[in-house]
Amino acid sequence: MAKRLLLAALLAAVIALAGLTGSGSAAISCGHHVTVSGPVPCYKARAIVKEWKRTRRHKIQGFKCSGTVRSGRVVEVTCKAPGKRIHWKA
Image 1 (tube, rainbow, N blue to C red):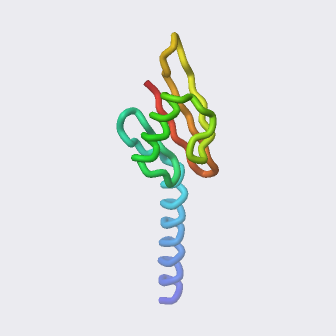
Image 2 (spheres, rainbow, N blue to C red):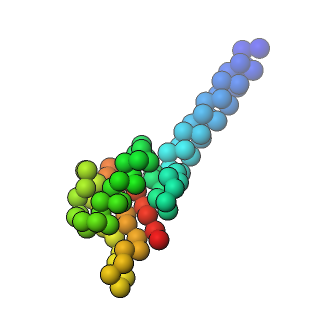
C-alpha cells in the first residue's frame, strides 16, 4: 500500500514538473501579430511594439528592442528583458 502511494506521488510530481517547464517557454499570441514569452501582459506588449514602431528607441519600459525596416516600413520588432520576450512580425 505504501509503495503504491509513493509511486502515485512520484508520478504526480513528474507530471506537474513537465507542465511547469513546458508552459514557461511557450509563446502566447496577444493579437495584432504580437507574441509574448514570459510574464508580460498583452496590453503592455502591444504598447511597447507600437512605441518602438513610432520612435525606434532601443530601450522602452525596461526592454531592449530592435527591429527590421525595409523600404521605410517596419516589418519586425523584437524586445527582450530577462525572462521575457516580445515579438511582432508583419
